[in-house]
Image (tube, rainbow, N blue to C red):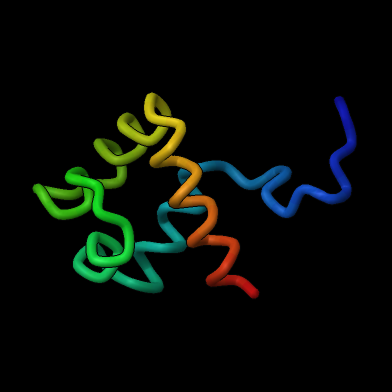
Length: 71
């Protein structure tokens, strides 16, 4: 396994990131912060993960919000 000492997301699963953001902001505020349909149209962890895994630009926005929320 490659060490990634400068990657703050190393070892953190997308599911953990999403659950943390939903807990911190709730679906409504998360949808306001990142305009992704799966956050405001019948949101769920499962459907959001499916979308985020297939959509790199959306995943990057979620990861950036998570990083800014833990600083």
